[in-house]
Image 1 (cartoon, rainbow, N blue to C red):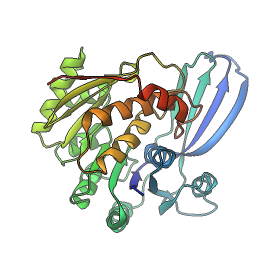
Image 2 (image 1 turned 90 degrees about the vertical axis):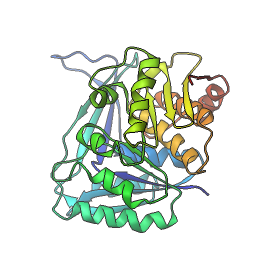
Image 3 (image 1 turned 90 degrees about the horizontal axis):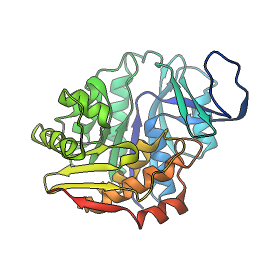
Length: 309
């Protein structure tokens, strides 16, 4: 079974509130509340498992017990290796209205302990002996160096790595040899301006190959995604616009890409179509880290892939 190791540098307890509508400045009644272990790499690991792969989530956690993050991982049955580091694990709150409008509140995360970066690198190096792909995801909490994702790519050697990070960490990882998965905001941060078309997004991504990226997959939200590799470039989108909760859609795409990367010789057209279908299937689910498998199969058969060059 294909095994994907994920690294969540800034884990969270994800809280989802369902409301009829969100009105600022007013009292809003909550219809349902869900809580689960979160953070981008945790979501990736959960989706990999739903897609039939094996996964292990590596993440820092609290220094003292009880540890609600560890307990939340155990509740969903996700294999994990945790590094004690924080005073507490942050929370994220997603408020999902009946029409699908989603508002997300993100706590910044507690400062990581001084030995956390070394401990994470050691854990990743150890687990990669039994891994087919590595995914490094999410923001960095205070106390972790911006180049830590790039270091983890180097530690992976010839194992394919997806770096789904942002800000200074993305800039540091851009030349590391990883597959990058920026959204349009993150691509604009790297390139200095926002692309105004699919063609321009592909052209900006191509520059990142020259800087040392193995490949670049630009996620375009409901418009689909673009993959740019040394072998060519492709654009894929669903046949219909999917509405719902977009939280975790990029993580679902990263999970699908990781399983394709694990083959070492992926068909990028197939990988991109699979990533777009998996991302759309995540939007239908009420919480991140889950996908609607029947919808994914249905959309996967209808996705169009255009070869750009």
